[in-house]
Length: 193
Ligand SMILES: [Zn+2]
Image 1 (spheres, rainbow, N blue to C red):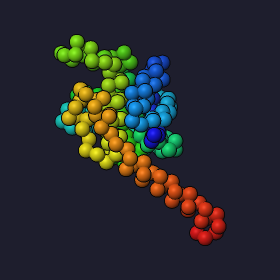
Image 2: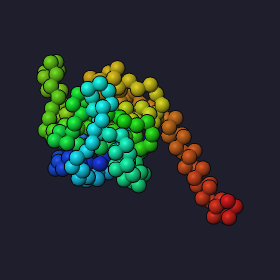
Image 3: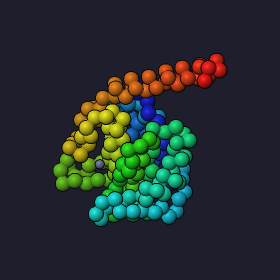
Image 4: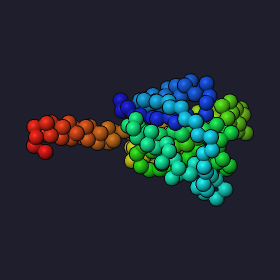
């Protein structure tokens, strides 16, 4: 099974974060092995900018300069910046996928024990961080598979969205890339490059 590295820049200081990420890993396990690395960050005034009318996300330039280099150093495929609601200034938004480049930049903000309540499904729809994080991770995964992203078509049936992911093409591309790297290393060892 394909393995992708998910780097979590964790600015929340929540003791429950390892358990939350374990739940995320288990939920994605049927289709992709997420190798999760938690990294504590301590930013105390994260800047935000308007992404859409009345919806804000972490200032992209700041994210790229302050968070992405750490994720790149860890060879992450996906970077999730997790914020407590105290630091989250998203207003109308709870999370974003804010890049299409690698590592894919994601962000999520809410309270540690928040739940999402909807007028159906018996009210409690689930733990909020889990709901936001898996939604954003799904957006990132569709970039890797190259499929049409259906996360917003079935926002309340994410099991179906997850099970629609097909990684065969991307896995093949990765195998070719890894072979090329090995070949280049061999050639350079023989001083032919
Ligand atoms: Zn979305």
